[in-house]
Length: 126
Image 1 (cartoon, rainbow, N blue to C red):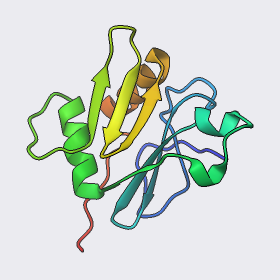
Image 2 (cartoon, rainbow, N blue to C red):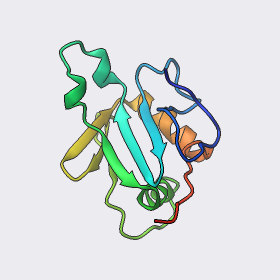
Image 3 (cartoon, rainbow, N blue to C red):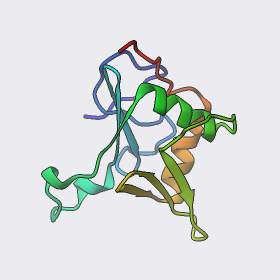
């Protein structure tokens, strides 16, 4: 079950932006220790998809906060997590070989949550 919150503690379940309409099509994030996991909720809705094949991006809390800084248009160096919005409005969130594609509405809801600080993560000591 998804949940939403303003600030997430060290370890949580998956959550979405409070701006997400119904939680069925969204950027989902989970914090666990020093790791941040990102997935696309649409993957599980397709009965042909196996949960074992679900693409999940894993980054450190430091990488995550650097990425959020970029989204907020603040300079941050060394960001490997990228977002590219195509002419059709769909945004691909990429990290290495993994790419998650979000609809314009999904990405807008995620960005609104980013601006509101809903996805902020304190970098934990290693």
